[in-house]
Image (cartoon, rainbow, N blue to C red; front, side, top):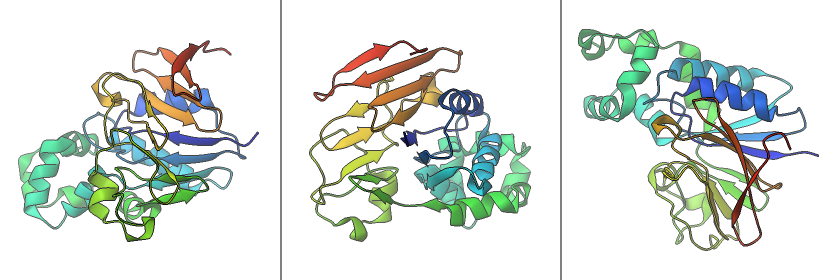
Length: 243
């Protein structure tokens, strides 16, 4: 059976991503959407981007990648000092450390830009999308403004808007997003939304949702795994990991 899979905010947590990917083991017939925020805060941003870039190039993996607000900050920080300061405060220092940039001088004189491989910049610029529509779903990193059509959304809403649940978007599509961290480590699922950022960088699991099976696979940094399934009334039950 072809699965539609979506993976929440990674934020540099490469070890969790690697373990989760091996566990879920997407097949060539599966479709995977990464929800953005691959970099910052966690220690392994460079390794995460290398991993995603390999998937992007792989002929036997159907994967698509959303642009998150942290990727947008990273891109804009190359040319704007104020954005650079904000990005560093929001987790960019950890990202630069993963590329071996450890001095303030290297940051202030702009040398840090060349420390990041050109292939990584191209992936962020050209390989990451602001919005992906798939049948009854619309994938975005942040959210959608209800008073605008999907085609007319502002990037600020797509990347930065928080999502705490609610009805279907007027387009009739359910919003599938990350960005709004779920500190209880459980995805938000309701009639109009699925939010899969389960706070991986803050001690929570990295979550991969198998959408049509209504199952969330969760990988914790400590090695623990958990599977949750939601009902038609959006109540969760924990499943056996081996099931």
